[in-house]
Length: 304
Image (tube, rainbow, N blue to C red; front, side, top):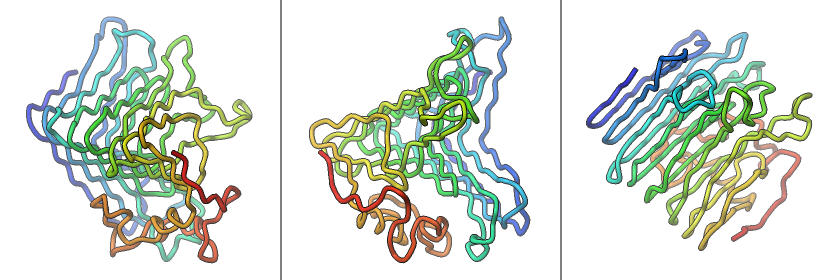
């Protein structure tokens, strides 16, 4: 299957319901692979703007929203590869995905809601080539802004402005992200450059019986330069990033707390939440007694 859009692509979807929605996946592309099937591709030459938001009450099981998902069977063969190319040097890419539960019922809820932004699984390469601006924002209990699993790869390029809010994720259950006989190593890469570029988020590290040290085997290859910075969201822990020419790691707790509590996450973005809520309204466990909660806190430094 080959889908080629010569121009802009825009999608806005809001699901507002008094009942729970188990899963919302839009747009969602799946490609199986059998010998002889050949490659498949999805491409957009112009601007891309996608917003997928679910607003629903809590339910008896976990929930999720997926906004830009491309999945294929795991394979190390170039013949099986699905290729996604989006944008051009003068275009923009904007993606906002969220799953909002009822804040008034949040503390009573036993289930978790997830929101996936850019998601590549199996023998899929997603290349975001928008050169002007790339903005990826995910808001939910599990806010996975970028996922690369079972050999999937995501490259954000080096746009003039790159902004990511949310987690990067290589995990599928106990699967640890490393290359196998039937898949490549998963990879997420991109270059953040300039004072208006940042990543406010974490790298998901999961401890399981098969993975006791929390290693995922995926390749996180983010570079920060010329004033761009990484700001941790919940857990100040990464496997690897590269700082060049003024790139920074911002670990001031007071600054992180301010981002959580602001009605707009950061003046550099155009993110606005329902009824002007703050991110902390949807993660009440993050802040306790006016301070960031968690085992690794009281960190106040900036590394350059």
